[in-house]
Image (cartoon, rainbow over all chains, first blue to last red; front, side, top):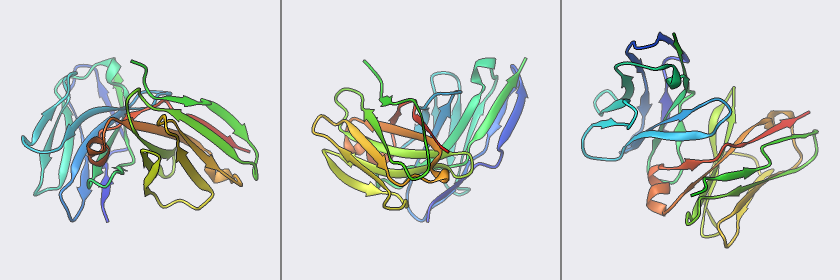
Length: 112
Length: 116
């Protein structure tokens, strides 16, 4: 059965520092990979996705993630974070059946 | 273009009662999915509807049910509420089945249910 592991439940970081949020998954078939972000008291927003093609995907606000099939990972990175990036980030996988499997989430806290 | 709208946003019920939550998808979206979010279990898939048909169902007891109407609006119902049903219930929509299948979803802000 597929599963998603987010290795860090909380990541504190100073503003303008780089950050990496780790995500590993297990699945016996090809998957689609996602990062969703949840700001306080809001729903989830799709941050970026890997469906096929280039293994490096980017968001409009400077985040990027790289699909590594051999390591079954999809880590999220940003070279310089802002206070406004403070949120909870969820890694998710889909095997194409119409349901997402989410990790437990990583709370990113950006301090001034 | 309005996003996914969920009502009510907050509600409090007591054990044994039932609750109905409503979701209006983005205009033109035909697929609606429901997820439960709790601190302990995280985000878990409840069910997914497309064109009024339930296509997929998560591992929840029969007390959890849902439906979709011809205008794509969806409702979910939880009967005989238990304390453990306290959660944020999120609805998500997508335009076509291909996006639902791959997981490209637009989420609402959720309905926060507290069971006392």
